[in-house]
Amino acid sequence: MELSDVLRTTAAVRQFTDEEVDDAQLHRVLDLARFAPSGGNRQGAHVTVVRDRATRERLVELNTPAAKRYAAQVAAGENPWNTVVPSAVTAEQVAATPVPELFVRPVLEAPVVLVVSVDLAVVAATDSGLDRVGIVGGGSVFPLAWNILLAAREEGLGGTFTTMAVAEEAGVKELLGLPDSHAVATVIPLGHPVKQVTRLRRAPVEDFVTLERYDGEPLRG
Image 1 (cartoon, rainbow, N blue to C red):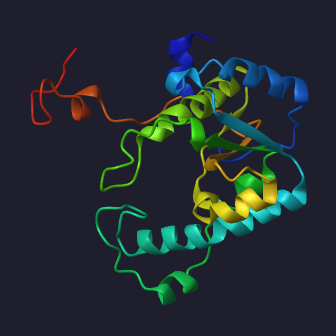
Image 2: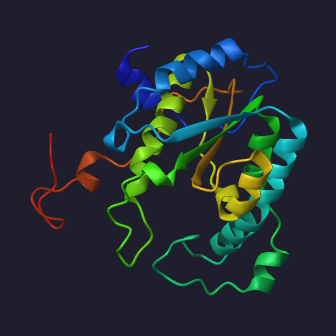
């Protein structure tokens, strides 16, 4: 596939066929993805490949608290899990909210699940002293995670970033034996899509790119 086609058609895939993803195919995906950049080229990211059903069921359990809060906030008209506007949703509302299948089915039905983590001991988190959630450290792990989805697209595979289990990181680390210094970035269910989306809806460049200042003129083609 042409790179422009891959970039325009790599969708968030959450429904998979029963076809397996063997080690050779997965190796090809990761062999391409590994060329992602990282801070200082320290390459501190790690991918744990999970196929075991019991492990995936436990990952679903770890998804549940964050997924319930997410769904409860959406139902209340809030932007879920944002760190700027405090939530008015109560613990009782969260507890009473069912977990949407969207947060359960992919991890259970995908033939393989990739848990992507990064060693914080080698990440240059230059925003760690700011009074907000850290973002910069993700630059040393999410390029790899995104490359996995791009390389998977070329192989006819698909997947999506899931992050609900990250809220229960201690449980994920215990489940998979991750080192203390590692942070879980995302859990990627991966497989053969039931349907390959070829047209994605995204905002035009003019909606999110400005010249010189945030309130500057939009960049136009």
